[in-house]
Image 1 (cartoon, helix red, strand yellow):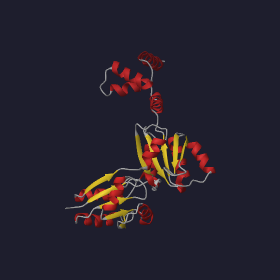
Image 2 (cartoon, rainbow, N blue to C red):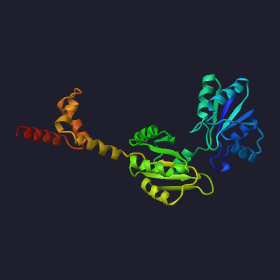
Image 3 (spheres, rainbow, N blue to C red):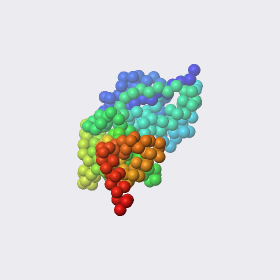
Image 4 (tube, rainbow, N blue to C red):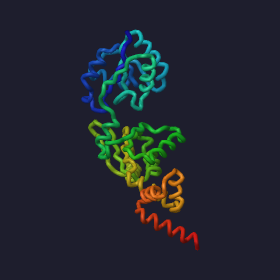
Length: 286
C-alpha cells in the first residue's frame, strides 16, 4: 500500500503557532522533506523531533520529487515542510504535489500559518475578494506583463518581496498602479511585527530613508469601481455620440435600446443623448 504525502504548515515566526496535528505527523512519518535542512533542524530540535530529514528545494524539485515518490510507492509516509508557512505556496512543493497526483499518491494538507492570509487580515483593506501574486518574476518582460494586468485588478492584491528588491518593486507598483493604498507587513507573528498602512508614494519615501530589513508582504488596494467607471466614461467621451450609437446599432440593437446603452456608458440621461445627436446633425448640416 502506497504511503501519503503530508503538507505540513510550520510557523512563520512565532513557534507557538505550530499545531498539535503537525507535531504528531512530523514525529511519526518515515521522512521529512525540508526546503532547507539547516533551518528546519532548529524547528525539529525545539520540539524534540528525531525523524530523519532530506532536502527538497527549488534546484532539485523534479529529480528529488521522483525519488520521494518512489519511497511513497514503497509504502513510506513523507512530510513536506518549507522554511516558514504552508508548503506549495510560492514554494517548490507545488511541483511535488502535481507529480504525486499524477503518480496516484495521496496528498493531504495540514493547515496552519501562511503569511499572505495573516497580512491580509491585518491590512485594513478589503478581504472580500483578493488575488495572490507571491514573488513577482525576475524576468523583466513577464514582470511588466503581470504588473500591467494588475493595473486593472479590482481585488485586493498580495505580493511577497525580499528586502533588497523592495524599493524597486514599490516604485514599479506606484508607476503602473498609481498612488494606491498599501499595507506593508514584516516580521509577522514575531516580537517586532510591523504593520504599516500608507500609500505607495509614502512607502517609497519611507524606505528611501529607512533601509528595508526582513521579508515583506505588500497588501495593495485594488482599483475601485469608481475609478474603473470614470475611465470607461472618459473612453466613451472621446467618441462622437453618433459613433457611439452606431457601435450598439451594429450589434442589432434598436435605436431606443442603443440610446439607453449610450446614456448608461456616459453617465447621462437619454434626453441628453437625443439632444447631442440633434446637435451633431445640425453641425453636420452647416
